[in-house]
Length: 127
Image (cartoon, rainbow, N blue to C red; front, side, top):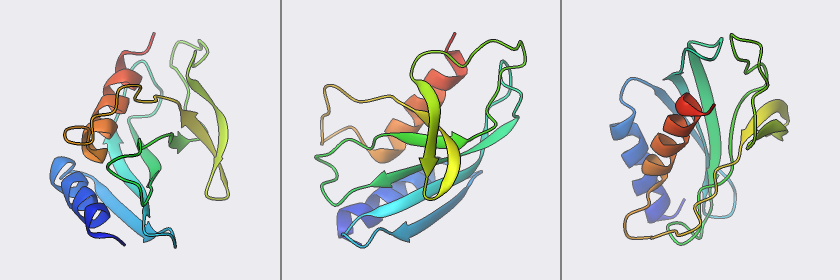
């Protein structure tokens, strides 16, 4: 893995200290990352979820996108998951894709950890 990827992973670990962070080199200088035990809760049925994503070798100049989570993600009120959330495949297994692209990426400030924080905030407040 390239040094900027290792730094991004260390930043994720220090930001999400209550979570398990699993990594695997992607074979191209980047890494696949899965963060487990992220708190979610209402309006979702899941109290905790995992979120997976790839940090590519172009990081920090490339967006960390998309993010994936458990295929069984569901709302407690029975409503659909809504825009930006759909069925997908994450590393050979069924998953739910969380589509939150950063349109104005600033490589100096937009870290992989910050992106995951934003994705989780969006998911928690998504109507």
